[in-house]
Image (cartoon, rainbow, N blue to C red; front, side):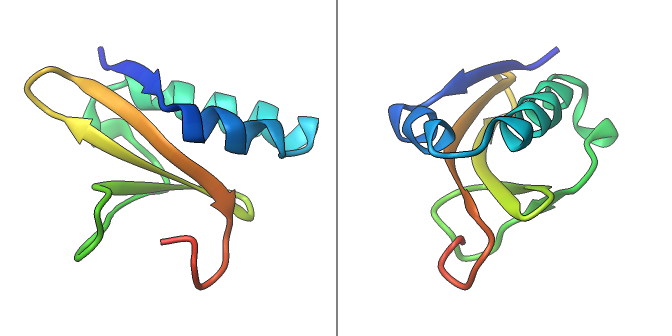
Length: 85
């Protein structure tokens, strides 16, 4: 089971999001505690400072994943646009 940690930036981003979408984002991030092969709507990012992105409606959650320690670090949450990644 993976441990999920939040950066201060991600917590701050989450405060700006409407409550309905917050619930969806928490649920989707909670599902990341499952093994890697059971993740849905997750894409490996190439040429980016973050490892993965999670799609939750119009929002994108970017995170790093330390496979050996099984720690997911939620780095940033934002509305999908050309600057999200």
